[in-house]
Length: 305
Image 1 (cartoon, one colour):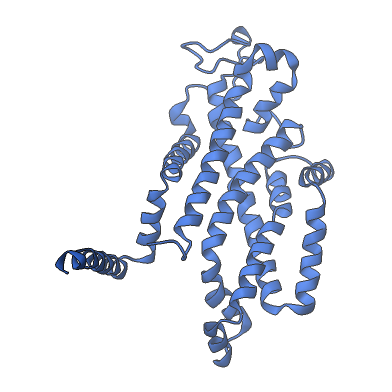
Image 2 (cartoon, rainbow, N blue to C red; image 1 turned 45 degrees about the vertical axis):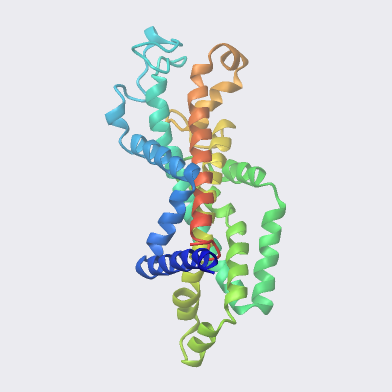
């Protein structure tokens, strides 16, 4: 009998320890502990922080001006003086890649912020009020989602013009439907919960219920969605710039650096002129997506403690 009781005692002790730890830890600490268990997401976060620090402090990691031309040093392959070589105008590719990351990350973060704000507002209003308002917003969302995003972006860029501000507004203004659908679904499931009904009974205005009572409960899936929106915006900027409708030269971005690959000669014989920007874009987008996966698991209330 005593031998049978030992496993039960050990299990009970483990349950007590888990419950005690849950009582002591804050929600932020629990989320961080879950996130750390996702090793790939943790490594991706470290790499992403390094990339962002290098982009933000670009002058500390470079010796040249990104737009400085040297006809004597044109099309040099990587060497001790120019780590990533130079382009056809003699500009240092390491410097342009680092400075290009600054612009590409800026576009990604700003566009994701715009699309998230639009998506949260439309999704919250649609899900909370329902009926006619929900039908109108969802039909508009469906229409926007039926068109290929890159085609719309190219058309709007051709009409409105290129430039950093225009690119941010174009990408952010066309990437909100997915966020709208996500937030709407969350509000539909939460608006009839007891805490919402209690807030209505107290006579609180709808905007307070929407923003202060329901929105905090939507933050977990929304945070993960924001990370994916950032990576999608970086790829959209790269695509627009590669096609010549993004941020114009000489301002370096990863997209317009990769535009060099449109030349068959450079694509085959001079990979140093486009490959660093392509690798930087790929690495950054993968890291952001892995961090998003880690956040989604860490903030999921159904996950085991």
